[in-house]
Image (cartoon, rainbow, N blue to C red; front, side, top):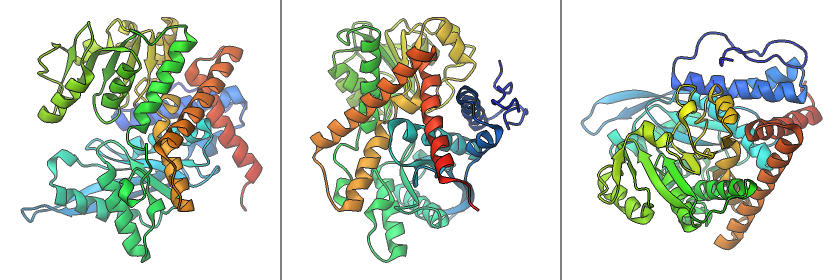
Length: 438
C-alpha cells in the first residue's frame, strides 16, 4: 500500500486525501499523518463526516516575517501557525525554526499533537508553528527580531486560554522568553502562561528541561519490560544527538543501558563496548558535532539505523525509516523520540520482521505532559517541586503506555495503531459530546 492508497472509512467513502504524490518532507509527513488517521477512523467505525472533520485543521495561518540583518539587508521569511483541533481544550504545540519548515509539515505536526494530548489524557487540542529559517545563520539579535515579529503576526491566535506555544526544533527557553515578553507587552501586563518551556525565572516549571527525553526513557523501559528484557546491558543506538536524543541517551545510560552508537547532522560514531555519553555530550558541545570523538569509530548515518541493537531511538526529523531501509533495520525495539520518523510503508515491514515500534505520540509525549504541568502552575500562581513533576510525568506516561499495550494485545494491533485508536477516539468522543455549532 502506498501512502496515497488510503483506506476507506466505515461508510465506504474514501479518505479525503488528494492522490497527488507527496514530494517535500512536509508533504510526506502530512500524508503519513492522514494515513494514520484514516486507519484509526476505519478501526473506530467513524462516519465520513467525522473523519473529514478530524482530517481538517481548525485554523491555519501563514504570515510573512521580515527581518533586518546586521548589515542592513532586509529579508523576508515565511511563518505558520496551525490549530488542528480544539474539541478537548486550548491548542498546544511547539514552534520550530528550520529552513525546511512549510505549511504541510506544521499541519502534520499539529495533527499528531492532537492525538498525543488525547492519548496521555491532558485537556489540550493540537497545534504547531514554525518559521522557515536556519537559526544557525542568524545572530542573537537577528533571531530575537525574527521571533518577536513572528509572534506579533500570530498574536490574534495565541494566548493562555487559546493556544500555548512551546519549544521545538531550533527554539529553546530563550525563544519562549522573547515570545512571552512580546505577548505581555501587547497585553500590558505579564502573562507567563502564554508559553511553556520558558526559563524558571519567568515561571517555567522545574523538570521541564529534558522532559521529552525522560519520556523517551520511560517508554523505552516500559517496552523492554513488556518484552521481558532487562535494561541492564541493553544496547541502544540514538539517531539525532540533539535536544531530545542527547539527553535520552544519557538517561538510558543512567538506567543501565549500553549506548553503542549516536549520530547528528555532522556524523555518527560507534563503540560496541559502550560510549561515555557524558564525555560525548561535552565533545559535541565543544565542537558542534559528535564527529571526531576520539573514543569511538566513525560510521555512516545509514549504518547507524541498521545496527544490531536492542533499542533504536530515532530522535531527529520525520521520515528517516522508510520502505527502502526498513528491511535492514535490526533493532528489536524502535522508540520514536522524533515526530513521524517512520513512514507508513515502513511500518508493516518492521512489524513483519518482529520489530516493536513505540510510536511518537506515546514515546515523545513527555514534553507536552510537563508543558501542561507548567501551564497549570502558571494559571494557579503555584509551583511543584521537581520530584512532584517527575512523579506526575511518570504516572501519565505509564498509564498511557499501559492502555496502548492492553488494546494492542486485545485487538491484535501494533502499538501505533492502538495509540492512534485511543487518541483519535477520545477526540471524536469530545466532538460528539459538544455537538456542532450552529
